[in-house]
Amino acid sequence: MADDEDETATEEPENDTEPSDDAGDVPQPDDDGDDDEDGEDEDEAKRPKIARKKLIIIAAAAVLALGIIGGGVAFILMGDGDEAGTATVQLAGPPVFHDLPSVTADLKTGRCRSPYLRIQIVLEMPGDQVPVVQEKETEIMDAVQAQLREHERQDLVGKSGTDKLRQEIRMIVNGMIAPAEISGVLFKEFLLQ
Image 1 (cartoon, helix red, strand yellow):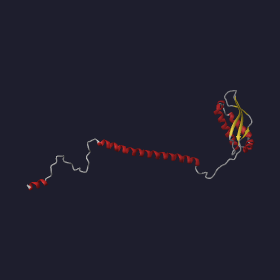
Image 2 (cartoon, helix red, strand yellow):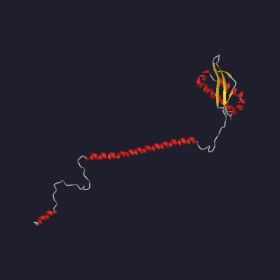
Image 3 (tube, rainbow, N blue to C red):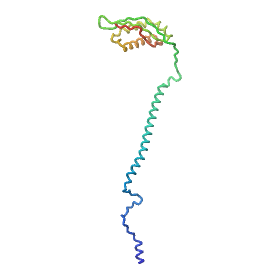
Image 4 (cartoon, helix red, strand yellow):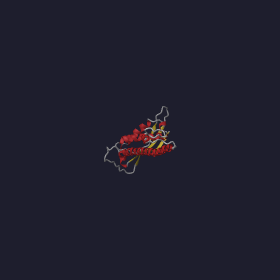
């Protein structure tokens, strides 16, 4: 009987359970429904990481945009560096107003009876430029009259027409008294008939 005991000891015991595959270290999932909760926990853990990454990317883009805008503003305000150390200071007194003689000019038209413009021009300039303008006044008046005769009535009607005429007169005067220049053109009288 001892031999029978020895034989039974060397034989493997019979198990009522199913034989296992050689996956002893790999845990088998439980079928009690805990997998869904574990998956939700993993998703919740990933969400703050993704949100943090997005926040970092947005913050970096904002800092980059502010840097570009700030650099552009600094470049514009500082200039291109060619005028390094130079500054111009104009110490001019209050502006002086100089009246030019009244002008009556026929306007350009294709009809027999042409419309005319009577205008009284006042020039605004620094006080030290008045002698220059007085010296060239006859030439300025001739050029202004020639320019007025090139206009038609509809060119001078309304605010845009008078503003355009102001600019033209300013360019004429500044061209004749250069390097000096006037700062504005005013009309005391502007009669268009």
